[in-house]
Image (cartoon, rainbow, N blue to C red; front, side):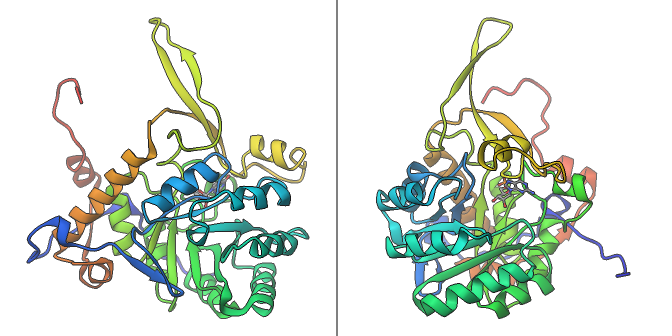
Amino acid sequence: MMSNIRGLTFDDVMLVPGYNGIRSRQDVTTNVTVAGRTFEIPMISANMDTVTGETMANAMTDFGGMAILHRFMSIEENVAMFKRLKHPKKTGISIGIGEEALPRAEALISAGAEIICVDVAHGHSKEVNRTIRQLREKWGQHIMIIAGNVATYAGADYLSAAGADVIKVGIGPGSVCSTRIKTGFGVPQLTALQECRKVDRCIIADGGIKSPGDAVKALAAGADFIMLGGMLAGTDETPGEFMTRKNSDGSETKLKRFRGMASREAQEDFMGGMAEWKTAEGVAVEVLAKGPVKNVILDVMGGIRSGLTYCGALNIKQLQRKAQFMEITPAGFHEGTPHASGRLTK
Ligand code: 5GP
């Protein structure tokens, strides 16, 4: 048995301020270049059916980020959606490892897709390796391959050796994920990122980012990109209709559905029901309407720019070199959240 290792996540640490020689947070850059492609912001919208369809993809790529379309639709619909995109070169497509995976990749690559995300719950697996190798054999360096999810150095190294350009990191931190409760497996996300960054590949921090501060910590821990699901859920650009619920005082609340791809609800919708030998590893929720996604993107990017100056870093690479994490106590965490007594007005 492996010995116990202490794992930390975003709320266990704070970044220690460092000397800043930068005049304004407008002077920092947030670019990230991967496999010859440059993105102006290190942000990716998650390939979940309640997060990234074409409208979200267009909004996220308009801001210079990356979007990855979900794959819970027919290959034909997926191709049609891809063809309607404003920035197809900045939008990825997803495949799994089943029979349909390569035909889906082939159809989308023929339609112009260059970013292929091989996405399964436990990416440190033989089938993912096989799929990456097949993609690379057929399309060479023309495509950028993202693969995951993993949460260990061994997992990241395995996918990198298979030929992935980008490793997606996160086992169990997601806001609608119940893998850790259902299986006992997972690695607290900050430690997972610090382990996976040891491979010479770009990494994506996928799951568990619930504030701009978490995004800064993820980047400082070694991520090149942050992937957001829950933070974008409920914005105008996500797929699905808004619902209105009446409150007991007569007022109304606007909500939208957001669900884990391994939730019972999603499996019933897309896999013709949930097999008896399986358990759901995700949940479905109704989230409050958040308005335009622009507000969330600007809030997160504002946090990242400010975070860079607290570290005295001009860019994300410098942040990663200079960042110093301090492990904190529950009292330190509490102190760091707004705690004035009184009613919050804004
Ligand atoms: P969030 O930003 O909401 O914290 O995390 C989003 C990530 O959660 C997704 O990108 C994906 O990796 C993960 N995820 C989505 N659905 C499920 C699910 O049903 N189960 C698990 N274990 N993870 C999920």
